[in-house]
Amino acid sequence: MSTLSTLNTADRYAGDRAAAVTRLFDRLSGVYDTALVQSVMYRPPQDEIIAELGRRRARRIADVGCGTGILATRIWSELPVEVVYGCDASEGMLAQARARTDAVTWLLARSEKLPLPDDSLDAVVSSHAFHFFDQPAALTEFHRVLAPGGCVIVVIVNPRTRFGSRMTSLSTGRAGHFPDERSMRRLMLDAGFATVDQRRVRRGSVGVLSPDLVTVAQVAP
Ligand SMILES: C[S@@+](CC[C@H](N)C(=O)[O-])C[C@H]1O[C@@H](n2cnc3c(N)ncnc32)[C@H](O)[C@@H]1O
Image (cartoon, rainbow, N blue to C red; front, side):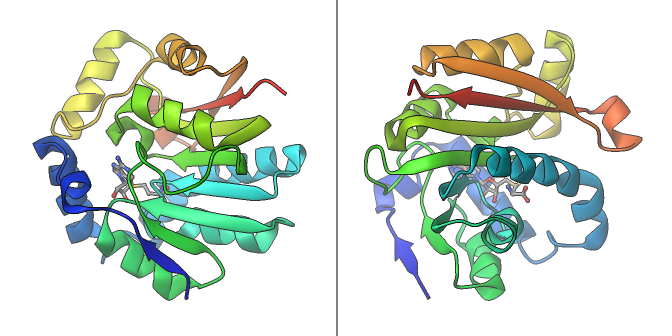
C-alpha cells in the first residue's frame, strides 16, 4: 500500500475553518459512499472528468479532495494511466479510499501544499471539493505541479448568480465558497493558466436547481 503522510501539525490545523471541514468529513466518511449520494451527486461530473482526461491522453494524474477515492480509482481502472494520486485532508475519507485499492497512491495532503514535484503531472482534477479550498493558493499549487501543456479540471456546483453563490455557501456552514463562472475563469487566469474552457454538467432533475460547472484550464505548452 502506498500511503504517504505529509502533513505536519501546523498544516493540519491551519485555520479553524479548514480544521472544521476536515473534522466534518472525518465524521461523514462512513456513510459517504451510499448509492443514492453517489449516483445523484457525483457520478455525472466524474464521468465528465474521465472523458476529458481520455481526450487529453493524460497519464500522470492527481485527484485533489479525492474523498473516499471513487473517482481516483475509476481513473486508474478506466484509463491507460501511469500513476494516479488521491489527495485529501481527511484521514477518515482516506481510510475508505485505502480500503478501495492500493493501485492509487493516497496522500494525506491539503490542496494548497501538495507533496509532489514541480512539472510532474499531466492533469490535476477535483470534483465537489474546490469550494472548500483556499482557491488562489490551491490553483497556484496545481499550476506548480503541472507539466507544460498540463491541465486542471475542476467541477463545482454552479450557482447562476452571486446571490445564489452566497446562499450555496451558507449551505456548507460558510465553510464553502462557490465562485460563479466568470470568477472561476478569473481565478484560473490569475494563477497563470493560459486557456480556460467551461461547460455545465447535467445531473438529472437535481441539476436544474444546482447545476455543476466544469472548468478546464491549461498550462501554456
Ligand atoms: C464533498 S467531498 C468530495 C469528495 C470527492 N471528490 C467526491 O467527488 O466524492 C470534499 C472532500 O474535500 C476534502 N477537502 C476539503 N478541503 C480540503 C483541502 N483544503 N485540501 C484537500 N482536501 C480537502 C474533504 O476532506 C472531502 O473529502
